[in-house]
Image (cartoon, rainbow over all chains, first blue to last red; front, side):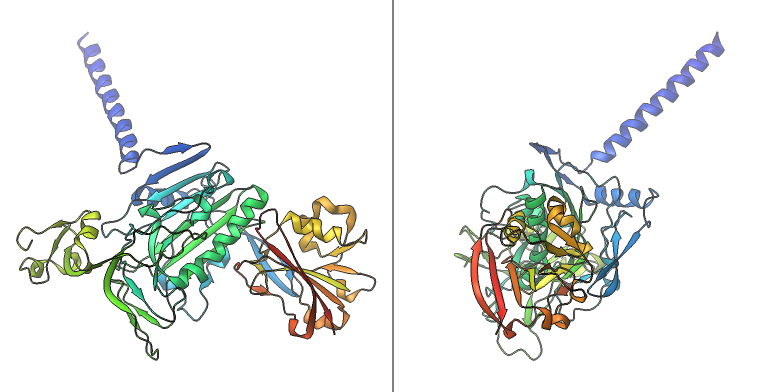
Length: 375
Length: 134
């Protein structure tokens, strides 16, 4: 009898451990994840960067990757290869593998083959946006694009959003004058996402219009024409603690026709010819050999004026309110901000120290709090 | 020979071995203008014309063979066959798409004789231009 009781106790402990383990697994999966909301057939959800990384890592081990199938076609008398993409769960790119900008706004990478894994590919429309990181930077966004999530109304105002590294500066020779646009990672014309802070980065006019927009146009028109779905992933690529992305990787794959209509994997350079950009802060200056000075510098502007532009990632209109910015020193670990002269600013370890020019609203919007000594 | 092309604003045709765009309204307009004549395409374009099988002929080297009147060209270099071309019909998407294969025709050697606009199925405005020699 005593042995039976012992066995029962042991069994109870085992069951309890199993229940806790299952609960723990379920809990860790939903941590930092907002509840998805459903609109019609489309699912819009937000996932943390870690969630996405987990998906990527799992996909890399699903045995599907690296099975790139090649087909040959004759184009313009040349034998070229087209690839039927099969996923290796990629979605990230190393700057070490990207050639220096040499005049083309984009470059094909990985043989123009996207890296969606089999279990990412679906015909059910959805969008998924990563949480901002500790520096307020966007990360990978992924969607299955379909007619049901494309916008039916004009784009609204996005001027209130200040992506990481945002600076308002104008150069005469830049199309539209403003160096930076609030660039949608998934273009507005594709998903109808307007002022979603997880979908907007600081991008040059050049990257926005010459780099990203042609791809968005191609995908949008394909979906409208065929009613098919397109898997679409955009990954902003940052170097170290820089606040402005060096570029974005865009991958796309049409689902119903298995990539026959849309299939690409490209990197768009976040550059502006004639301008040198400090990617750490977003500040800029004329490139060597360029003669025209910027019209305004070192100011952050808040736009309250609505824009009616049709395309996905257009710049805001002329600003109506101008707010002068200040220099701060950030502790990216404690999430406190200091004045440059604050004695605590000098005690921040180099790996946690970040200099920033902007406003307290921006910093507090990213979760930073003022140092009580200097503020 | 009448050559029919679909181009973006940069004279682009293809990206990553795929056509930049498509529109059912363009296909309908092409066949409306052929008056029952057949359209010659390459095998690259076959899937685009699955609804028009009885109206097409497939030949991967249409400029090296005789007898074709209307050729729809997506993946072909044209400049080398320029002497065989009498007319070029261009459907312009009025958009910029990604491109790695461009039309190599020098349109300055041609005369624009007609320009019309049509509303596309998925494109707001498509401009149709007809060029001839001389």
